[in-house]
Amino acid sequence: MRETNPQPAPTAGATILEVSGLCRSFGSVKAVDDVSFSLSAGMSLGIVGESGSGKTTTARIVVGLERADTGQVLVQGQDRTARHAGRGRAHRLARARGIQMVFQDPYLSLDPRTTVEAVLRETLRLHFPKADHTGRIAELLGQVGLGPREAAALPRRLSGGQRQRVAIARALAVEPAVLVLDEAVAALDVSVQAQILNLLADIREQTGIGYLFITHDLGVVRCVTDDVIVMRNGRVVESGPTAQILAEPQHPYTRLLLDSVPRPGWDPRHIAAARRAL
Image (cartoon, rainbow, N blue to C red):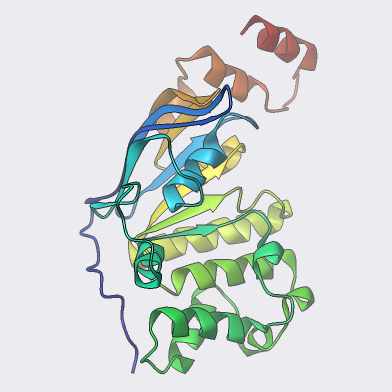
């Protein structure tokens, strides 16, 4: 018997993630400065910016790996930033079932001594202890395009793309409403990137999960997000539908990011001058 997620499935179009007024400082540096956005079920939101823009710190606050100085994160209406929120095991598991994160390097988040099947079984056992997980493991592996051979393998025996598929399967095992992907395809070859992005598109269509993509790659943003916010120095400088922002950017920094993508006739000196002027 499969034990299902006790949280109700989000209604299509319902807001599943709401971030308002997030601020986080490290000493005198404002890493995140009054950041607000929302994500609806079945939608994909990109957060773009250069290194140091605050996008990863924002993501870490959203999933609970960092604590905001001020601001609020609501996942399916539940406050993730309340100081009085519980910290026990049951509370942590409930939080994990609302939102999961996939990192850039899956190898660092996988136990090198544990097979893929054991990784998934342990995750399922932790969250759904009363269920028989054999069928669910096969379902998850099939969902990410892996089979029995990969299930029996250790992480070091898998390719980078296969390991990322395992990381995605593990995140999906708890049936979260939101999946945060922090540069999740940045370390992969271009052809493998395309496979993973197509996989994620299929999963979103099948499940109605919401994606929060953290990336510096505007090509990824163009392919897989409905809306995008652009961050610079911890602040949101522009936001809106992805196609509109990339076609008609209004902020000079967004235009600089687009102009920085190499193409025929691209002049790095012009980009350097524009960066200094900005």
